[in-house]
Image 1: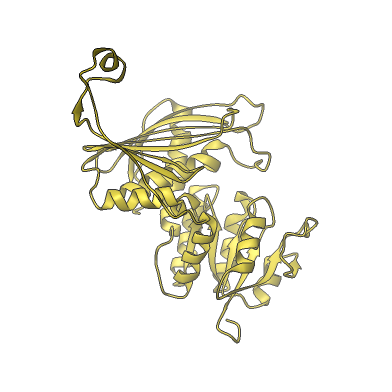
Image 2: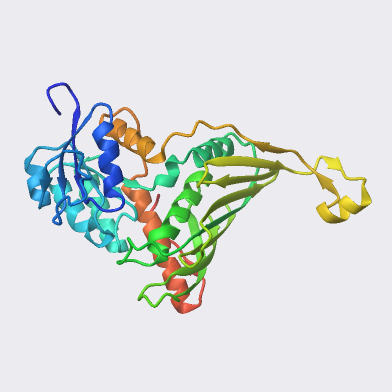
Length: 336
């Protein structure tokens, strides 16, 4: 910590996400950004005035309380293990690692040392999904039957090392488990690769959660339409969250019989209320950083743990295994 009690934070990676982490860290209360690691330097001026270093070892030598790991996914394990060995807490961008084995090694490295470590599954900090989760926990929907997500848009040129399953579908896997409080028990998936790259760019997956809830995910990099849609259907109706706009609406089950014959044929026999909730819309990345800072300070545990991040990587691996084999794959893996 600094003399005034602020946490000393570092950042590894100044790419498309790293620059946003640098911006938030530079303005975060009770935190001082003391160094940024990027072997390519800071040609775009994104480091917010912090010293730019070539190696993780140089950052550790500055004496940091925690570091944000925003380098390419394939480097997460190597960087994370160095931080753990030095006793440095870490917030690692999602997915936590590019392999299940790598994710397990990171869990062991940080847990065995009693270090606070989290995964940047930022949808957990989206206002619409935080509101949805609290409403599901309060029992507003009754029994939950199904979660459906759609996450599609054009190809992001920032991605080169993983396919759409590890880059995008991990968002949907994590948020589904998180909002329902359940784990995946099985998954069946199909993938296609149409963009000429070595990895898949479209996936359709159907899963089953530990309480019997069905989950369905459609994720791709092939659509000109950008969509971030989550619906949860249950006993009393359906919640719909748009995480692009952070809007949450609730469609209740039928309450009023429609007597107008022509409208009844079009809409169905009866209709329920639709409510659009007013939600304070704070920037999800800022919320994520505040929650992680508080976890390092021992004030909160509202973060995505490495063990939960491992579970998501295990489900993503099962998605790819199912797509390759054409079979439904059971997800055993680690306890969440």
